[in-house]
Length: 314
Image (cartoon, rainbow, N blue to C red):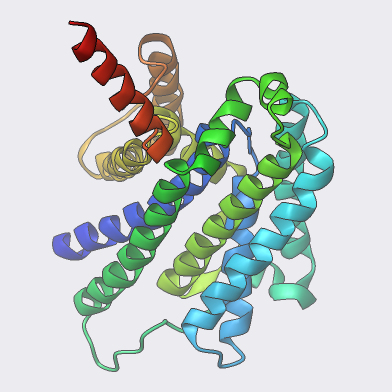
């Protein structure tokens, strides 16, 4: 494979999975929701984009539709599931993701079953080289990444984000202050699902096909590794985690061409991922970057007031 094309492909993947990692960070990092079925909403976005693109709709409408349908499914799943304890919520959403994948796989009339669906590229450049095509996708993916990052960052630094962190830390205390934990959690779950749907649509149009095998549960756990490695509740951290995990993933795949290993490189990759998570949880549980500080007007005024009082007292 062309080395430059390989690097461009890696950059696209980092952008797409950076968006998925941001969606999980919103749910887990800021709201404390253990979503172990993240791949389900990634799948919904991808298949929605693929099916609608065949009708001739513009790519941005397909992308928005994928986000909206993912958000609706996220809301429907969250309403009953959020009444459960955190561990039961994780099991319910994990089961939903796998059931959805098996339905798409076995029911040919929905989306072609094992054969999947062919997708037209978002921007058609007739006769363009693969490098130019990859550069166009980089621009599209990173524009969407910037929008998603901006939304999550502004939300995290708003009074709404402060309320989500309060619910994450102590639900009883937050409810005593009048915060409806079920409403906040459902909204966070719905928005996180919508962002994952955007990533799914970008994934589908970049690969120009969708297959059930592309949405195995390991995708969810890979995104969890990105968030835990980079730093929950730190948007820059999860983007760093996405980049490192994708680099590690590609490096493990390349190793089989240059090294003679006693085990399959894919198996070695999973072993190393597991060891990495254990190491991070033991020695750096906050991730590579610590949780970002809250930057709301009320917090800034409180800090300014404290510093002014200290200066006055001295």
